[in-house]
Image 1 (cartoon, rainbow, N blue to C red):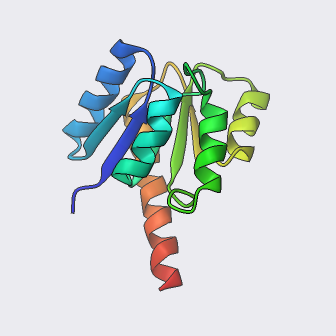
Image 2 (image 1 turned 180 degrees about the vertical axis):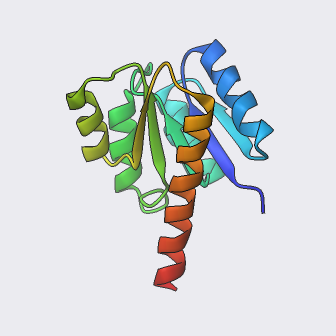
Length: 131
């Protein structure tokens, strides 16, 4: 079954680049350009993974992540932050907010895809272990 990845990114060029990279690998994508849509689309489309920018209009990425972790429908959805915020504190804050991984911009498409595969693999094995 094709996995769906929700991409929440406010820069149109980056959003399109991510869409192309991810769809080329056979994933389906859902796109959101602000934090409100990102949260709403996570509930509506039930993605297998979310790529979430930290700097978003309407609701910042950290708050979106925390809200997703508090909602029963999305509390276990894997989240990878993708952000220009690259200090150790920024990364730690993202992980403490509930992110499963954190990739900084500019990013390597190969590294991002490897991290997506790894997070999905870990998530799928964790779910299988609980059955």
